[in-house]
Length: 304
Image 1 (cartoon, one colour):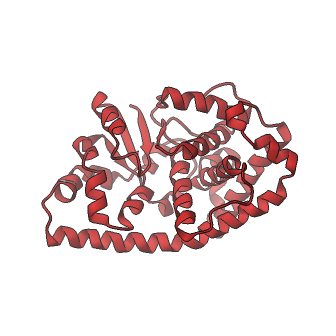
Image 2 (cartoon, rainbow, N blue to C red):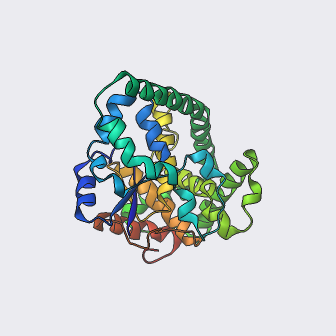
Image 3 (cartoon, rainbow, N blue to C red):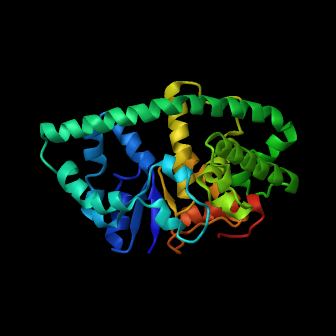
């Protein structure tokens, strides 16, 4: 059964409603990060609006565990999909739609949303230092790559060219080093028992997506977001796209974010990482063409 991941701007789209109506076996995964996005502001108004349509297909929705739990998840391929999914929240989702999204407004419901909003704001505020550190890291990488290397990356997806072997290896090493550093800080380095398992860890998926973001942003070295709002938005996007690399596809209206995801997926696939969780090629025709171009990063001629 195909299972695609969606970001916060795609959930209330007609495209998603059509996808879910088309077949009862079509499923959609919503990451915890997206719920945080909805709840960080006007939680009740926003969540009721964006989930109004998808709640009509609540049994086709899968809710993922929060990212802090997923960071400590084993990289073994066996049972990986089950470890990604929050079984309790997924089972409760139809009830959540009935009692919160479609229920009449009441003080009790509003109070629950206010609690969610407070929790989400705390989580988002805690991410701000991480986001600014990431933008500073990109500026360091501007010095790490010479003009010729930056030129090789510029317009790579549009031109459909393969990265030179040495530059390809450099991007892999950047992701690997970034992931291991993150694991050490979290006291989770023992999870990286082998390269195969390392590639399946969320820490590596996040690192690969960070590298992919840099690759896709390289056309304007140094011109990275600086405002708190922009930094947080990009950081949240990166975290969502990283989780999407496990699934049968990624649905977003953000063209640049889709490219970031495709580059990250190319890096993950080249190292034999776990992808296509439902065993279906859930990419649209447009995404498939982009993926074939992105896969040239790894020297592959096609999809996973």
